[in-house]
Image (tube, rainbow, N blue to C red; front, side, top):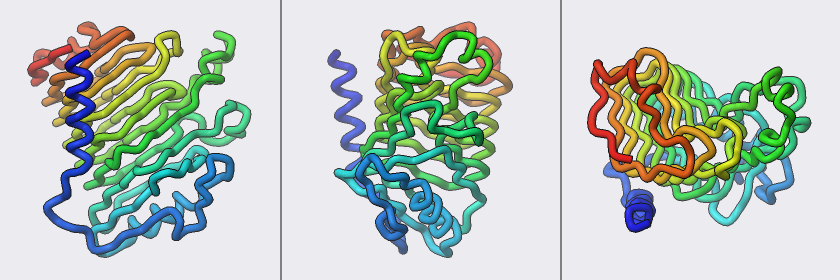
Length: 263
């Protein structure tokens, strides 16, 4: 309990500390027509804001405003971008609740970052996958159509995810695939103990990844690692009541560069 409290305090401090270089451009979802009432579809607003941020010539802060809830359908936020972006999640981002609401399109991911470089995600807000109806499906339906990964970074470089809460993922909460130079620190990752396949942080074929000072409480592994990986460091992770950090998942990396693990 004491360790969990310390991790949460550290997360708060990490969010409050300013960056050394102040951004030149500030964008907010409101600039692109977002409603932020938790009911309206704000997907186009986020897509438009991302497109503007990605095309900007100078560094950008893209703000998800505090005290509001933005309902977002499956969306790919693609790069490469022209300059560094800070995605400041001060409010809440939520998914549509029912699997039927997702339609027949993309169901592998919810929030998908693809070929993005030099991105910081921070702000102290919440990303809520609202996965309860996904977990409740019959086993045959889960096998035929796996639930989406909530936040997925694919082929990305220079990514920092810090000081936010990820909760109730449809499946894995935070995934990095073929990505490098990654930090996932001071996070709170939670879902019920009986939630189905809700891994906390999942790494696939990624390198130079630091996962530190996190509170992870999910229905599956706190951290899992598969495929080829190098220089993966895990430290100070408060883990449970899920399956913890499963040594069998780490074996392919242990002989390479995995270092100090505390759970």
